[in-house]
Image (cartoon, rainbow, N blue to C red; front, side, top):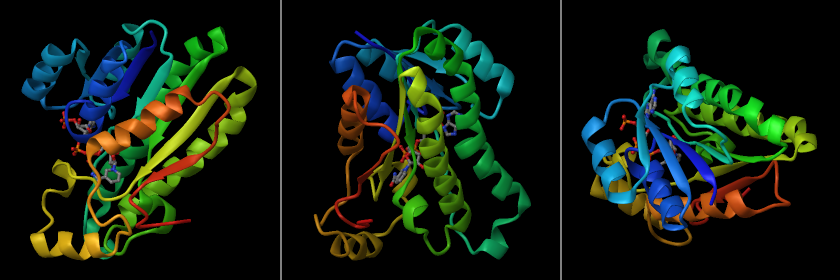
Length: 233
Ligand code: NAP
């Protein structure tokens, strides 16, 4: 049984990860920012422990991780998106995306690492996006944050390998969650036509890749695309 911490576990991909790791019998804590009712319902249904913790709040992150004990698997999934021309994004929104998607990840890594280094064991799984691999028009800021996540993953894998800590990334494509709920039927049809596997992914598709990376003892520094072939790098 592993101790698993998942950020952004209240909804979407993170909630599927909570269910998948609990199904294996792992002990799971998940962080969320606002969705108190959804988090409580998921905790009740799965036996996972929900912790209200906004990853943009350094003190809250430190306090949350102090309550977890040894973290074997850390899944850095909390993220937000924004669509718009680069000139329309605005400074505040630009910084907000980096604050959640990149700096929040950095904070959680720093909070979990001392224990992992002491025990010379651990697996970290970051969540990027196919747009972090190839970039997307009208999602320049989001793409930049996810590109940063991929670079962090690769650098950290090199830094932490000698401590027997693996760091890998999942890069989802189009996944049916609240984040993509604004897409119209026409948008979805076009996107599915451009996807070799011809459909949107499910949160469970991504959770399966997370479970694989949690167990893959000789895999580190990799970006595992879960995108139905939409982007093949
Ligand atoms: P989602 O359904 O919008 O869920 C986002 C999750 O992140 C929620 O649990 C949310 O908590 C949490 N969160 C957001 N801001 C937070 C903060 N400041 N502190 C703590 N938790 C926070 O998104 P999703 O589609 O599952 O996406 C999960 C990850 O996959 C994200 O990193 C996203 O960029 C990435 N991704 C998604 C897609 C896709 O097509 N869906 C594609 C590529 C990559 P609350 O419920 O409390 O708000």
